[in-house]
Image 1 (cartoon, rainbow over the protein chains, first blue to last red):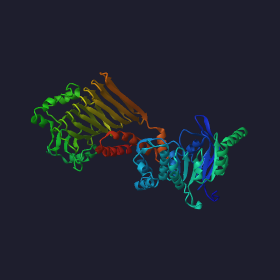
Image 2: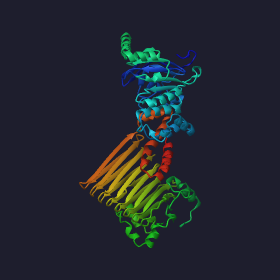
Image 3: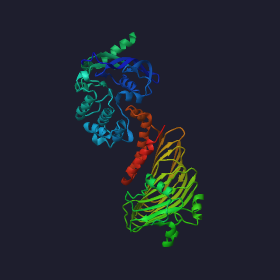
Image 4: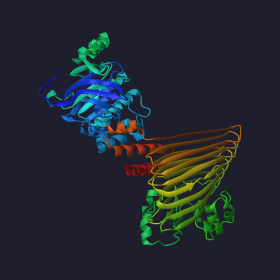
Length: 256
Length: 372
């Protein structure tokens, strides 16, 4: 665990309850992420993992029916996507859309107008060959994931959320992905000076072998259960599946 | 030859015609120039031995066969505008003639400019490419700072002889005070290739045009259009391909965005010859509730061995894409502009390399001036 007792809270999710078209997807989620911490959210498909990061990012169509999201102490529920992104929240999408006719170079230049910097970032991510290509058009699954990280490098958010960053990525690319994720999360900076925080959503957890995380949770049916040290949780999931947590979630639903 | 002297004000306005591809300063390589401002031909020049450029009024005197070409492709009785062109006693317009086998590398530039308030510009242009010759024409049309409505009416007849290759690019920047009625027809002989690129990214009060290409054996035509209708514009644009000969082919591709504007895109292909092929495609992007885009494809097969197809799609900016860009910190206006730019730039793929950069820049300017 990192020595983050004295650190400021960056993100606080309080009793977050979310619906889409009348269907409840998150049920009273609580989560506190301090500066420099990385949290991991496991969970089976359809448990609400993507909903959680999308709602924090501010994507529309989600209805927050209860609870709050505080970023650096301010409620951000009324902030739109741009305001949240500009204040330092970033998301690597699980399924980013294709953007026809817009090259990655043009997009990066729009995110950071200084052309030199955007080219440098692409070079460091070994993606300079992609600058002329249209964003996500004809990209493989792995290329899309890399592209997401590249855009986040340009955006430089303080809270970096990754939605299934390693799914569909081949073994050779994993190392590069991990390098970029570590950079985004300032993993090479001493803990005391580390400011950036992360939320990694994953159903496999393989990435945890490469990126140290501070806290793990399992999200089941819209509830965060089984929180604890990430590797312990990962072991438990690996050995027993999500069954125990599902049971726990079921029990708490019955009680509450 | 410099035909007439210009006044200072006009000179200044002409210096700005680079926006429609007309370079008066001579910074870009050109094989020649032709410029008409209102009813004055102010430039008529060829830098190539095998490229003849002159006002049509001269050409009918110099070559006895030119007069026969007039209204041989466009019916003079077609409508009130062709009748008006036919009724004019004084000819205004260009004659561009490439001799047999000459491949003119640098683009030829022409420009039709409306300078005076309420002027009615009535033109007749004849373009002839003799067998196996090649020419790339960039025509820019624009207006000065008009405060009252002006008109541009033009009959253009193009003759692409056997094996010749004509690329005809038109960039329009008319403004809110111009009504525009071009009437064009192209005869493409055996093995000839005709490519039309039409780019209009700014306002026009009203434009209506529906050029027709007649295609002989092994001849082909391609019409590409990129249109951004804005702020009360009305575009009724089309293209027609008549596949007369064996193995003739025609493709009509449009990419249009409409903001508070009405756009009609027509495409007509008629397959008469054996083994003929035709395809039309229209992609429309609607930017607000005050806009409309109407795609009217029409295919007519008169031969069992003709293959014709069309596809069309009209939609709005996808919210998913807008959200994606906004999640990177772009405000909604910037994100929309980027998506409009991307949509229109997809149309550049079919353009010649020499033109891509120019049009790319024009699209960037047009899209960045987008406001919600």
